[in-house]
Image (cartoon, rainbow, N blue to C red; front, top):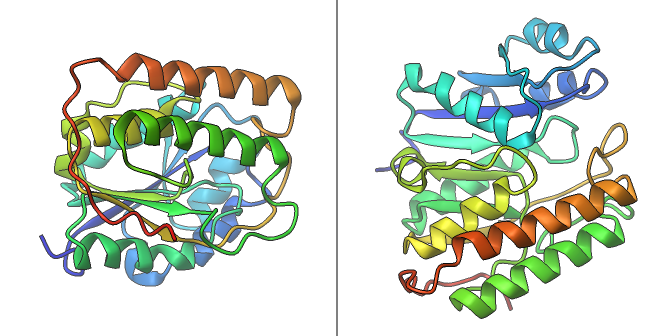
Length: 245
C-alpha cells in the first residue's frame, strides 16, 4: 500500500507532560493531525486538558506503563481503520516534523516497520544520557548477534503498517515495548529499516533514564524481553539494507 495515500494514526503515550504536549501536537505536520490519539497514563497534572485544547483525541489508561498506554491507543485506533500506526513521545524530545521521512521510507523501500534512529540523526548535546546510549548499544548489538540485522536504536519514534502490527501481537506493558516490537519484527521476517531523526533535550525529567533505578529497571526488562522472544527455532529474518555505514 502506498503510504502517501494511506490513513495514518498517531499515538502519543503521556504521563505528566503538561509542559510539553502542546508543543508536540503543534509540531505535527498538519496533514497528519487527524487522528492524533493522546493516551493519558494516569497523569496528575493538566496533560489531558491541554491535549484536548490542541484538538487531540484524549483517552485514559489508568494502568501505568508505556506499553499499556500504547496498547490502549492501538485499541482505540481501530475505529479509524488506519493503514499505518505512528508512535511518538509526548516530552518534545522527538521532532514530529521528521514524520514524513519515516512514512517515505515505508513507501519507497516497501518496509513494514521504520524506526526513527537518534543514533543516525542529529542529537542535541545532553539529550541522550550516557546510560541511554549504552543501553541502546548493548540491546542492538545483542539483537544483531541473534538475528544478523543491526538496528542502531530502540527509539520510540516509529511507524509500522497496521497489518504488520497486528501480526506481532504486542503484549508488553512497560519498558520492553520497543524491544518487543523490533525482536518480533525480525523473528517474523518483516521488512524493517531505519531513518535518521533529530533529537533534543526533553521537557522535564525522564521517567526512565533520568534516574539510576529507572535506568537499571529498564535495562533489565529490555534484556529480559530479548531473551523471552528469541526462541531457538525462530524464523531467520530476511536481510535488508540497515542504513548503517
